[in-house]
Amino acid sequence: MGILTGILMFIFFSIVAACDGDWSGIEVIIKFVAGFALFAFVLYLMTQPVLILVCIIVAVVIGVAKSKK
Image (cartoon, rainbow, N blue to C red; front, top):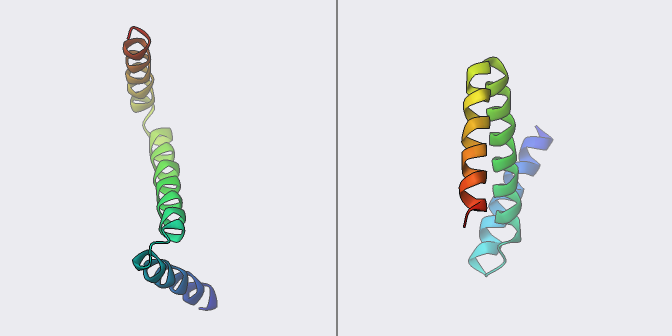
């Protein structure tokens, strides 16, 4: 319960600080959420091998398209 309280206080005080112009707390929250989403996406890809192949093909196509610029 103490950990949950600490997390909620961090989120609340980050929002309060953002109102005064300090966005560092919000930045940490966004990085944490994005990291968790990336982790969950990679775990999902591990259960769907065909999607890994599709992601690799898309990454190669994007890499080739950017290198021709």
